[in-house]
Image (cartoon, rainbow, N blue to C red; front, side):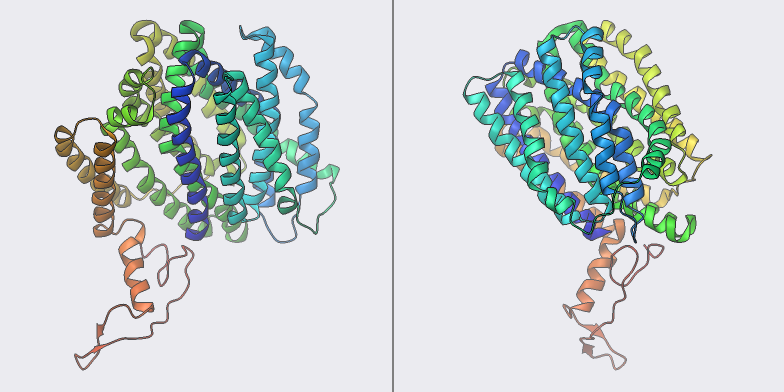
Length: 503
C-alpha cells in the first residue's frame, strides 16, 4: 500500500507543483475575465464528463480491480465510445440551459471528451496496480499542458485557447501511453460486461452528475450573479486550495481503494477493514495539517503565488475553502469506499442529492448577503453536512472503521504545528522568503510531532528499518551491543515487521 501511495503521491505532488506554477504564471498573463472564461468552461466540462463517462470510469476501477483473469479493458473502451456518441446532445443541452456562448460550450464539450478518455486510462492503470505508469502519465500530461498553455498565453490567447490546449494534451497523452494501458493479452469485449457496467455504473452516474453540478455550482453561480471577473478571481483561489489539499487526498485514495476491493473480494469485511483503517489514518495525516497550513498562511500563499488582481480575494476566501476541501476529502476518499465495497451506489446518489439541494438553498442566499465570501462559506456548511450524512448512510451499507485514538494523535500533531505558525507569523512580512520559512517550519514541526506520536506507524517503521539494516546497535543478553541481522516479515500495510493492528 505504501509503495502504491508513494507513486500516486509523486504524481500528485508533481501535478500540484505544476498547478502552482500555472497559478503563478497564468494569473499574471491572463486577466480575471479571461481566467473566468477558462474556469466556467472547466466547470461545464466537468458536468458533461460526469454525465457521459462516470459509469465507465467507476466500472473500470471496480471490475478491473478484481485482478486474476479479469480483463474488461476492451469492453470499457467500447463503453466510452458509446457514451461519446451522446456529445452532440450534451452540447445542445448546455447551449439551451446556460448563458454561455456556443463557441465556449463547444470548447467545453471537446474538453470533456478528452478528459473522459484520459481519466479512463488512468482508472485502468490504477485498477491493475500499475502505479508507476499512472505516475508517469500524470507527470507527462501536466508538463505538456503547462507548455502548450504557456505558449498560447504568450501569443495572446485567452481563456478559450487555454481550454483548447488542455484538450489537446488529454488526447495526445492518452495516445502516447495507449500501448501501456492496453498491454496484452487483451480479452475481447462482451455484451454481458456492458450490461454489468450499466447496472453498476448508471446509478453511480446519477450521483456523479449531482456531485459534478455541486462541484461546479459555486463557480457557475458566481459567474451568473457577478460575471467572468469574479468567477476568475474565485476560481483561481479555489483551484489553488484544491491542489494543496484535495490532490494528495485523491492520490491516497487511488492507492487504497483497489487494495481494499481486492481484500474484500478475497476475505470479506474482515480483510478489508484493516486496510481501510490504515487508509483513514494516512488520509487525515496528510490532509489535516495541509488545511491548517493553508488557513494560517493564506495571505502569504496569495501574495507569492497569485497575480496582483487575484491576491486580496484569495487571502480572504482561501482559509474558508480549506475547510470545505477537508470535508470533501473525507467524503470522496473514505466514505465513498463503503458504497463501492457494498455495491450500493444509490446511497452515494442520496448523499450527493442532499448536498446539491442544500447548496441550491444556501449558496444564493449567502452570495446575495455576503458577496463573494458567501460561496466558500456555503461550501463549508454543505460539505460538512454531506460528510455527516454520508457517514450515517455507511451504517446501512459497509460500516467503516474509525479509530478515535489515531485521529486524536493527528489533531495533536496539527495543533502543535498551528501553534508554531501562529507564533512565527508576526515576525515575517509577506514575501517569498517568509513563505518558504513558514512552510518549512510547519513541515518540520509536524513531521517531528508525527514521529513522536507514531502517526501511521512512522516511528515503528523507522525502528524496524534501522534494525533490519543494522543502522544502530541493540543490547544482547550479555549487555554488550550487538548488530543483529533482523528478520522482518512483510505485512499488509507494506511496513516491515508489523501488522496494521499493531500500529
